[in-house]
Length: 66
Image (cartoon, rainbow, N blue to C red; front, side, top):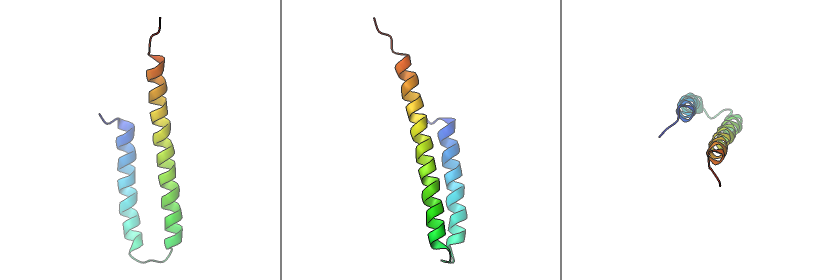
């Protein structure tokens, strides 16, 4: 059910959360961290959306019509 690309994205996000958790201990640079996390989540969402669109288009091309 899970594609390798999705698993890679999930693994990267888990590592990112762990690293950011260690940085979050001291609240210095919170706004910078928030901007970075927001940007990375936006990139992940765009990547996932592109992957879904790619799958939909490939499935649509496989539909046979008379």
